[in-house]
Image 1 (cartoon, rainbow, N blue to C red):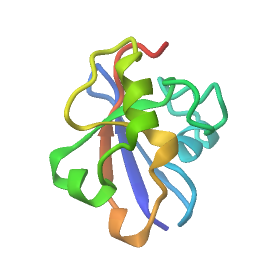
Image 2 (image 1 turned 180 degrees about the vertical axis):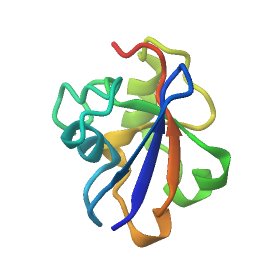
Image 3 (image 1 turned 90 degrees about the horizontal axis):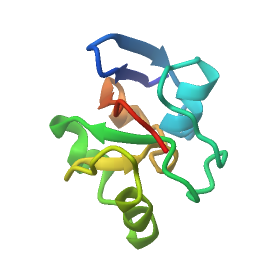
Image 4 (image 1 turned 45 degrees about the vertical axis):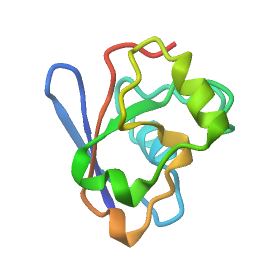
Length: 107
C-alpha cells in the first residue's frame, strides 16, 4: 500500500495508506484529511482537491492536462508549478511516500 503524506498550512502532517489505483483525493477523503474536499467526487470539474506536489515527486505524478490546468487556474489558492488536482493522481507503488502540501483555502 502506498503511503501519502498530506501537509497542512500549519505544517501538520497526515500520513495515510492508500490503495494502488485509488486517487490521492479519494485517499484523503476516506481518511478525513483536512483541506481536501473533493466536492465533485473526482470528476475533474472543480478544484477542491488542489495540492502542491513536493519537488521529488513532481516528475512521477506528471503534468496536468489542459482541462486540469484550466481548473487549477480557478483555484482559490495560487497555483504553482507543482499544482495538481489530487483526484487526477492515481496511486502506484512508485508513489509510496508521496508528499503533498494542502493549500490553506479551497474553492
